[in-house]
Image (cartoon, rainbow, N blue to C red; front, side):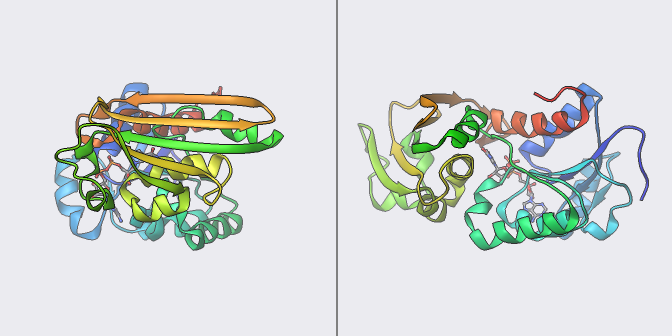
Length: 269
Ligand SMILES: NC(=O)c1ccc[n+]([C@@H]2O[C@H](COP(=O)([O-])OP(=O)(O)OC[C@H]3O[C@@H](n4cnc5c(N)ncnc54)[C@H](O)[C@@H]3O)[C@@H](O)[C@H]2O)c1
């Protein structure tokens, strides 16, 4: 494998978040996107769209040593490429963290990382305080809860539709209270933040999740509350989505970029 002068990453996916990562490579000048990994049937169209990038559909085509791989694609991409990359000794930043609610897959990834001597890197994504929550775990956490509050229309296409009339709702309604594991299973498209909070804190079975449809919510709001030996924290964020994908918070993309920059710059923050 070729070692490049400037560190290069393997980028998995070519959607909204991946576009932000490519833009950050150009604007910071601190890393290159050495290759973009896409589904087999997309190689031609993405190759034409991303002129100048090497577009591949298999890890067998990797002809350089990536400083890390950044998954910005889907739960299925984590399953498809994660174990292979980690076994090759390539660190993997995962945006689709909800995939780790599947315990068997999480174990498989950790086993592959142990074999390859690689790391699975979980960025904070769309929410604040994940570093503090994970640090607080060292002193002992008593309770961690996560509330996701979105406008009713944002819950369309989920089981919330069978619990509430999302078209006529005129006040905030909680339609799900339960564990992060069941929330990730039943609301997979909203699983990333619940999974991140669970993995940083008390785990999927002890993290309480509430999902709320709120006509007054201006956007996608996340609240995290934690109590433990460290004290108590209550954090909330109303994130702006990426214009290219209203389902993805811009902070989630910046958080993946932050993880890449931490690998390539001298000072880690
Ligand atoms: N951690 C967080 O807080 C957080 C927040 C928002 C989004 N996300 C996740 O980040 C991921 C990317 O988000 P996005 O806004 O860029 O999505 P997007 O839909 O705009 O783009 C996803 C891209 O990945 C490609 N893709 C999907 N499966 C693939 C596979 N198996 N192999 C190769 N390419 C594949 C798709 O073709 C598409 O181009 C999503 O899984 C999303 O759920 C995480």
